[in-house]
Length: 205
Image: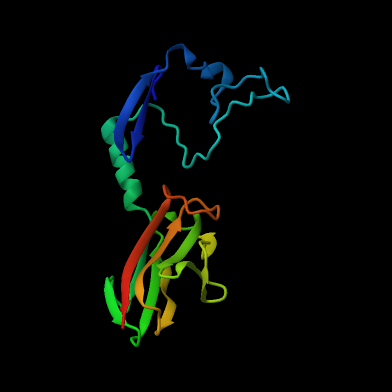
C-alpha cells in the first residue's frame, strides 16, 4: 500500500491493484484504524466508531516504513513458509500408503516440528476418514471418537513420536488418517490456516 494505491498479494503473488484516490483517510489526523474504513462517529450506537468495520479475523498484521517491492513480498512469504510447523504421521514406520489385512497389527505415530511458531496458540488435529465415518483422536482418553473435534488446544511445541493407535482387526475398507495443526485456535478446522500430513491405509481380508 502506498499513499494512493493498494495492491493485493496472495501466497506471495500479485493479484491486482486499485487506486485509493480520495477515500484514503488522513492518518496524520486520525491515526491508523485496522479493520474499518476510517474512524468516525456518524451512525455509531455509542457515539464512538461507526458499525462498518471488517467482520472477520486479521492475523500477523505488520506496518512498514515504505511499500515493499514485489520481490520483497515474495521473499517474506517464502521465509514465513519455510518456518511453518511440520507435522508428520507414520503408519508402521512409513509414510504410506499401506495395504494390510485385518489380522495385521497397525501402529500410527505422530510428531511435530513447530518451526518458527513455538508457543503459538493452535488447534491440534488427529482425524481419520473411515468406512464408518469421520473420527477424531481424543488425547485425554487416548481413544478415537466419532466426529470432527480438535485433539488438543495448546501452544505449539516440539512433539516427539507419539503413538495414537496400535492394534488390529479393523473393519475392511480404505482409511485416510491426518495429523496437523491449525494456527487459528478456535475449535474449527480453518482450511486457510491448517497444516496437515496424512497416510492412506487399505484394510483387506
